[in-house]
Image (tube, rainbow, N blue to C red):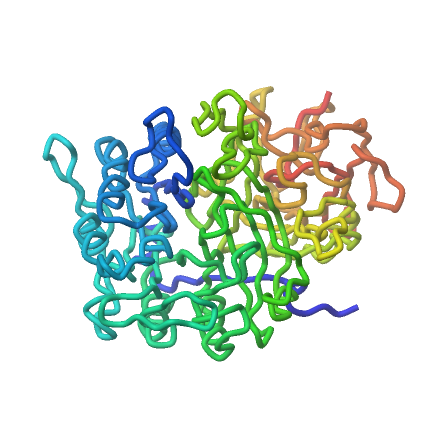
Length: 577
């Protein structure tokens, strides 16, 4: 059955055409940035640790994680305080100073809580004073030393000077690690405040800002391999039903179509937001179903947590059908670390291992319990990892569907999954009005390709003989449930170049699919399975071969193996005992 929309292959390939740019790529270095969710303190404060509606007791713990991870800068997705007063906004800016003192930048933008008051200019004056870095990238440490992060800063000042430093954009990184960041602020300003049907006030519309957005994302001219787009409101949320398009999710579909088209057409993989205090990953389609993007809603950094509203709530106006759920975690405090490494971006989601926190006056574990309204010490653990490769593809695989759609090629090497099915039963907690089991989660199976350092594809196995890879290196990911490293059982096939097959010269050596061991050696790929027994078969794969089976199909010049994990794979000779 032919599928469309989110069930078609997601494939965006960025090409670089000049030798000078490729020279830059060889010199680039991986780097990291952090993302944190809304920071609001919404209850009493018996410990006196959270002044002016700012959860300093939470922010401080998350800051420490970013400092330890050595990120280059941190982005906060709006709602910096709960009450939006000037003193509160200054308190929140001061809470980021430990990051700055560690040489880490801090970039923020407004949310609805910054813009709920007209008596302070909807937070514009105090925001501009507290975040001059949004226009210059310059930061000042407590010892008055300064540093600059980012280049090519821009704001849509041709729309209005009021937007200077509110909606903004900058670049960071070098070569293929260079990325563009675009932050969109649709909130009211002193010179533009329009009350929408959903009860929220908006400012300069997405339609008015779209030429600037499109210009900043244009991959033909932007000069960056990667691009990320942020705004406080999700495209389609889980609890809140307002959007940045001036109403509910059905508002201004023509604006939405242009916005989505600009994301997909320019290779933007992630749209990142807050507002909901829920960790949520989804594929969200445009109203005309011609474009789509992966949306990340950031987990809470607040004493406030929301739960998803029913999927059939009338205020979704039937638009929830445009959203396909990938992952969800509610009632937890968490943060994100993005690693940009050549053509790849990896996202790691960390959250406290307790979870199930209560909200507002019942934070953290219920009203009347010891420690009510006092932040506990969090123990953060990695909950989920995902990502993409610019030189690879992504495939949406619904539950019950075959992985055989996963196919890719790179510089003469062809990789295919020739057997296996998404057997997951995982669901999120987005129910309908009569309850139910939640939406079935899909998996995003991704491919990517790596080159060996130096280009000679040579490695030394444990026995000291030289080892040559007879294929390019495939990276395969996304085939496990969130938080699990174990995939469904599947069969992977990779083609090889016979000219690169070394004469074994040793009866102990075999030839087939290999992966990296913990000490960096290429070893028999099935040795890393969590189950099954290695079994070599000289010939093509056949239905019924069990986990751990592996072999060579000399007629098709492919190596195959039955696996239950994702990793990097290639074809080579290896010592198998």
